[in-house]
Length: 296
Image 1 (cartoon, one colour):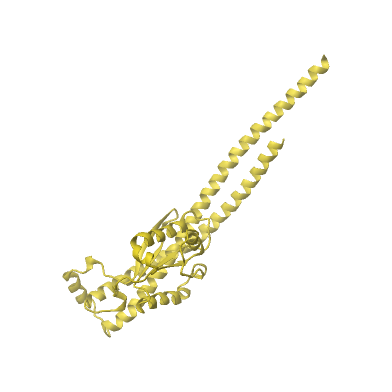
Image 2 (tube, rainbow, N blue to C red):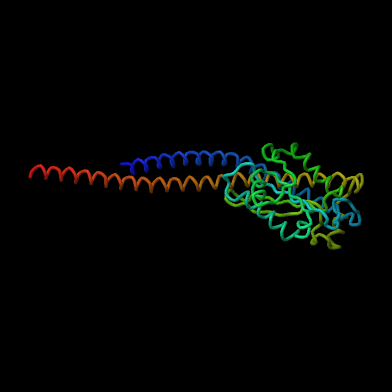
């Protein structure tokens, strides 16, 4: 009977866990819909804005701006975007592992010299890096909980100022790009300095861009205002991508956890029924044996 009681207790425990994981799946699904709509609306705007910037830059190929300054890499900053909450599979571990890989291979010299800094947006990524004895120079976990363009502007401006002020010679972003609820693409890209893709640098493309755009009041005026706007939009898009990826990863993980709990409950119920049948059979044998003994 003790064995039956243990199985019953475990069935109740797993059933309770299944209710929790199923509730978390439903909550994540609701939040995913909102985050997915936000990133789908943001992508065309960010892409078009970046496309305009590239063509304007081609109209002034000799114009030097601090945002395009490719300096000697003395100090580098890696911005790792994760989440403040767990239970989302390998979502946070993947970005943290990528940061470790970039530090040890892409910027090996800077890392050994202590001129590579890592900034984390999201507690879980920070916890993983610290568990592997990697120092985190700065954190802004509040950007994840209060995700809005207005809240992120001061930090984005701080990053831009740190580059234009030559505190850092390059700023890299590591985050998850949202593809669908089940797939998140690990993304590693340069935030600053800006660069024009080589395919847009042909003489024909430059000549076409010059005839396509009439810049008023001046190219310098436009570029001074357009570049910061593009950078702020790109960084906020990365935050939205990471947010949608987090909810998708959590929904998928909780869905799998719920399915596993259901399978485990079925197995436990089979074990319980078998043990109960065996117990009943033993009791019947004992009763029949006792009755036969009394006859004698």
